[in-house]
Length: 229
Image (cartoon, rainbow, N blue to C red; front, side, top):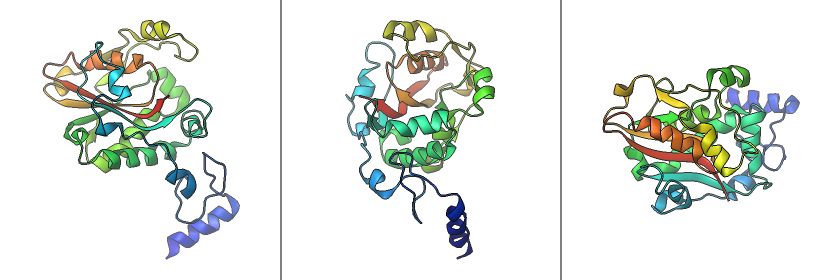
């Protein structure tokens, strides 16, 4: 009884705002208002093997399964979720959406994975930003799926420039060979779920997959929080 009263008291002075529509959250709403949560454009790609996320890697790299939690068009109100997470430090968005994503993937082929691996940031960018949004999403998924998160084995060895404003070809060139495995035996014979926040061209995730598949007998599946239409 005490905790809800304390939360209500705090919200009198520090009201929580829905990052999608900007309305004040009411008691029982965690980070999205009920309306935005109900109308969230879920992809349901996990139900289809030939979905657009999977097709992004066809003929390029071996991926077992691939999916996205929700869809957005650039400029849509749901794009604000990623912006608030990535650039405004709203860490709870990553954790909560990760939990929802993980719940969504229970009792699917994605539950067969052994380890959840967030796409790593270079240590310099991690120090500057203070957190890795893909790692937050991964920890939320881990809580729902009861799978271990590994943030030590796959590393970004090159602090490559941001992908923003690069052409499709430039994006592929920008990430080629920038990831490596510190301990390939850690992944040997295991099914790895690579997690990222947004899929555009798939260049970064392809580079990650190439590095992971260097471990003998490894399989890779991919899960992204949002797919850009």
